Image: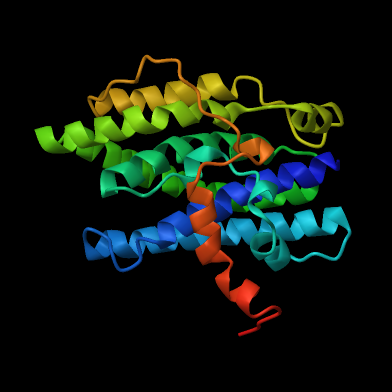
Length: 249
C-alpha cells in the first residue's frame, strides 16, 4: 500500500462527501443567505477534493484522474470518516456536523502547512483560508442556536448527542500516518485531539450545550466500512459517470 496515496484519499474523500452533503441544501436553505452560504461552502470542499484527488492520482501513477477517483470507485474504496456521511437532518443537525468537522480541519491544516511534502503544504495553505471561515460560520450558528430559544437549544443538543459518537474517528491513526510522519512527509499530529477538545469545548460552553459523557465510539470509515448512508450518496454522486462513461460537458 502506498501510504501517501492512502492519506490523500482519506483527506479527499472527507472533503468530497461533506461537500456533497452540503450541496443537498441548495434551494432548501432556511433563508436565502444561508442557502447561498452552504452552496459556497460545498464548492470550497469540492475544490479541495479536486486538488487532493488529483495529487493522489499522480502519486498512484496508474493514470487515474481526480474524476476517476471521485466517481468510479466502489463504496469500500472510500476512506472518509463516518461523520461526514451522516444525513443532513434539520439545519441544526447540519451545522453541528459541520462545526465538529470544521474545528478538526482547521487544526489539521494549520499543521499540514508545515508538511515537507510541498504539494500537501500548498493545498493546506489554500484550504486553511477557506476553513477558517467555515469554522467561524458554523461556530456562530452553534452559539446562536444553542443559546437561543428553548426549542433551538433542545434540537442542537439532540444533534450533538447523536453525532458525538463519530468524533473519535477524527483522530484515527494507523500505519499510514506513522509511516508518513516517520519519513517527515507530514508533521506530527501530537496534541491535535487535545486542541480540538479545547476549541470545541469553548464554543459549546458559550452555546450552553453539554458534551455527551457516554464512551460509545463509532468508527470504520477509514477502513472502508461505512454506514448505509454512503451507498445512497454514491448512487446520486456517481450516476452520470456510471450511466454515460467518459461524459464531458
